[in-house]
Image (tube, rainbow, N blue to C red):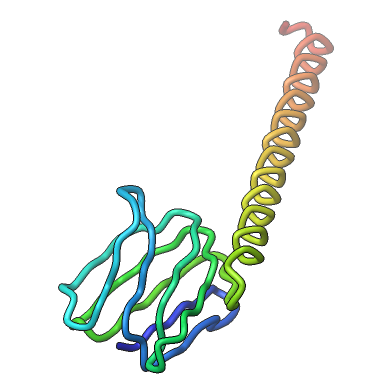
Length: 134
């Protein structure tokens, strides 16, 4: 089987000789072997594991994404962010750090948006008071 894991910036994995693959979606962990039925699923942030033609195990951490199986021979993963490597513990740590950083960025963006909204309301209130409308 051929495995491709891609982000908007790069192709992280392109291996045309995998024997099996394990991934995780909202329903849990699942496996794929040659001849698998066509599949489309949304992955949760997790580590994908696969065995190459020589039986060596490899890993890639993905921050969610979409996995497709086509024709039982092609597995493609599209993710916002992915890290490939052979050390599962390091990948899990990098994934946890990435998810935490994204959560922090989202919280900061929400706080900034709330601040902008409050400032806009204060300006509107001052305008209405100055014009005698409020």
